[in-house]
Amino acid sequence: MIEFNLLPEVKLEYIKVNRIKRLVVFASMLAAAVFLAIMLILLVFVDGFQKKSIRDINSDIAKYKSQIQSKQI
Image (cartoon, rainbow, N blue to C red; front, side, top):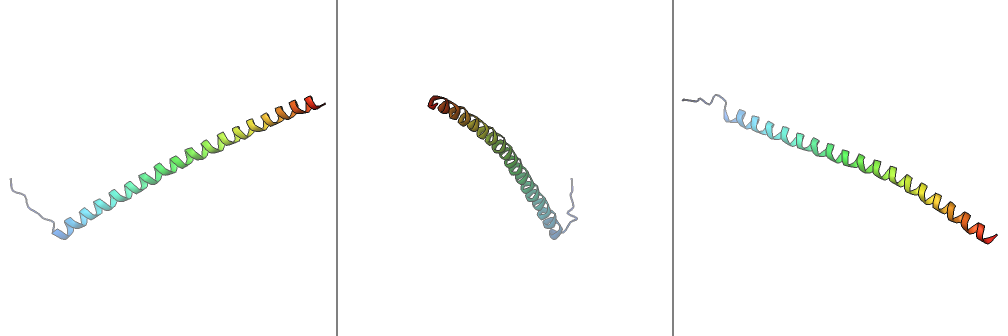
């Protein structure tokens, strides 16, 4: 089988560079999406659990405060 190279070297190099460029852009977008998802997960985790923790601590403070006040009277 005989194959003919109908594209000049410059065009082949251009196609190769474009392929690499698309691959780099895709990898960058994928990495950005992954890090954005991780950031959103951490934001929800911190926001939700921190509020619950503060609420629990405030209820403990109120409970112990009422215990101390009842013993002093």
